[in-house]
Length: 116
Length: 115
Figure 1 (tube, rainbow over the protein chains, first blue to last red):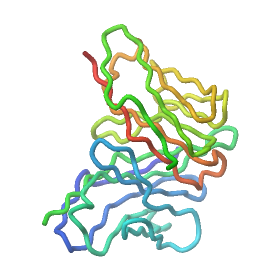
Figure 2 (spheres, chains in turn purple, green; figure 1 turned 60 degrees about the vertical axis):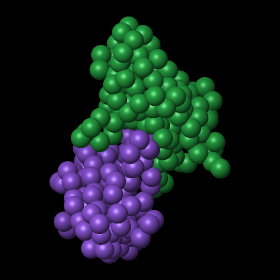
Figure 3 (cartoon, rainbow over the protein chains, first blue to last red; figure 1 turned 90 degrees about the vertical axis):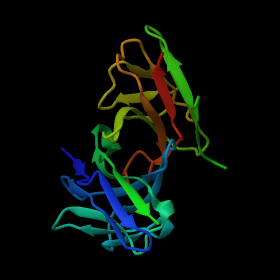
């Protein structure tokens, strides 16, 4: 079965410093990977995805993610954190179901706190 | 602007009562999804629908029901059989149910509590 893990419940970083939010996955076949962000009492917003191609994926708000097949990881990164980046971040992997359709399996989420 | 609208934003349920959460999208997406979010557990899939008049159970469908009579609407009913309904409910849609390379778009959720 497909699965995704976010090993850190919370990540703390100072404003202006680089940030990394970790994600590892377990899939059969080629992984389709996604990152989403959630602000309080809001829905999830899509940040970026990896389907195929370049291992470094660039997304919204200056975020990027590095796909590493050998380590089965898809860590989210940003060179310089902002206080406004403080939110809950979810990694997700595609899971194929019957009929050729698909659904997403989400990690438990990582809370990012950026301190001034 | 296109998007997903969930209503109401807050909902209270009495014991033994069924309640219905609304989800409407004007993105012309084929697929729609309902998730439940509890603290520290991420999102869990309740039901999903890839086309009109068809839907499938997700991982935690017990105590819930859905319908998909129109492409733009996917209401979720939380029945009295759901003994622990207090949670944040999120509706999502995606443009193409096949392939899985397109992101899901989310509404802003409905927070359900028991009175």
